[in-house]
Image: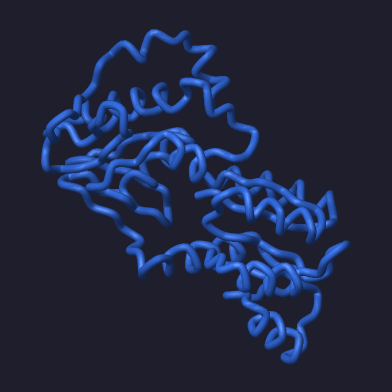
Length: 248
């Protein structure tokens, strides 16, 4: 999931961005309201974490502007103001939730998970595709009852494919939702991670679940490879281990 974090306190934003990335989120950071509106206009975000007191344009103005432009991503508003009137104002400006500073990171994570479950429809916390089971709360993956250890980026990619199971996901969509703005869209990082997932998920037993639709993208499905699809090719594994680590 890709987030836009808007916070003018650079020390706080650095800490929050680092913590969220450790939870598996791709995070872009903005430090003022005008830049936040621009970033949200040119990029696809799954959610915004938005401070109220921002230079150039306040968080309230940012939220109103985005809603007026038809942007429907969840907005979690952060503020030091804890009066009921302030919370009401933030919610009426278009925010979906409101978190008062100071806050515990665990509460931020929980509120974010709750917001992401609601869109575009109520999403389950456990995803099941055939005998593959993904616990999104603990970020645990198992197939046939056997736990599969994954890196953070491998897990994020697998969860996104699982949330869209049965639908072909193109490279551009994976880039938008799994990586942040620093990702090079022309690299072969996606192929590297798909190959890693095939080795761990499909080699765990049972029918292959990860399929490639030539010229279109990737599909996670228990229905078997569809026409024009392929399964593991092995050639993507030719990249050296040090190159794979830099793709993380």
